[in-house]
Image (cartoon, rainbow, N blue to C red; front, side, top):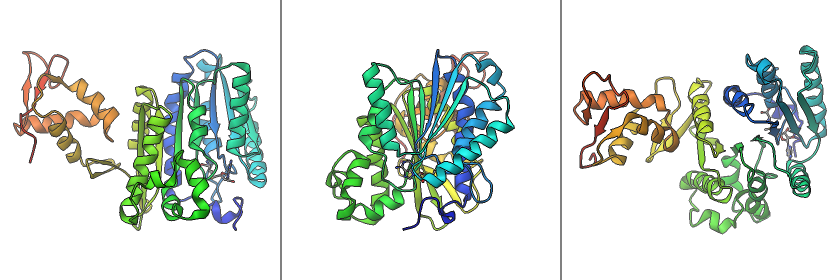
Length: 373
Ligand SMILES: C[S@@+](CC[C@H](N)C(=O)[O-])C[C@H]1O[C@@H](n2cnc3c(N)ncnc32)[C@H](O)[C@@H]1O
């Protein structure tokens, strides 16, 4: 078996760089929002890696640290304590990570006293259990937390553990669900315990009759997302697929939060990425693919509006923006271009009081009484 420190595992494909860009962009917004709370903020990287890839690209721990320390708002956040816990099971990787972090700290000396960093050479589940045990004993709350869970495979991230960790208020998760591996190994007897732990339910219930490979990937995504939502209680769970050049889905990135602001931040981060290098990030809406590209195809959103709002009147653009943000893969900024087109084509009735512009406050929309064919 190839060790997790083997150089063959540390090439940095373009989609990994995009994943880091997404993380960076999200944290740019997350740090200032979280720092408005009192006390501590925790960034927990459960599968932290060795700090740097073969081509010199920074790994997630350096991305997270750098985005805080170099943040233009950092001087205003000095009254908050930022705790970074980087958990890495492989000793060689952990040593490399420590070295990278020390070099980074030296490059930013004097290191701010309110930023605490630790590399923990242990497994994610054991470490998270120890943290939870401590909190239970102290009857304490977990600080507002962003947990990044980014394994090579599917073991060591039990759903039950995530549920307990994320049961605290103001906690959220960004998890890499390695669906390619899961779908390949899910029916092997030897993997039954790992799969049960990953989903927090029996394999038979996970599969629920979906034994054909063709529809299994999408089904597994749905089950995992539902578990994050129902089992953990995260109100807003988004996921999107990394599709490689052969058209196969390599993994799903899931983001789960209880706060609409978090959804907005992650949507911005997702739509900012510029795909390339033989992969795309995509989501689905009503069975149609939605690719995250700079010039997105807005037709699935248009169709969604015509279905969802069939026969409804006096709908505001603002209401539609929230719906779009929270319940579709699109961003709120995609709504008005769709509305303008629908109005031009006479597909909706716009009630616009004199002097009101476009879809400003006070402007409402009536939708046709029958859905599109
Ligand atoms: C995909 S890499 C992480 C990459 C890193 N998040 C980044 O973006 O730069 C997964 C890492 O998890 C480590 N690992 C494997 N099993 C683990 C476990 N049970 N707990 C913690 N770390 C583990 C591996 O040694 C490897 O370094």
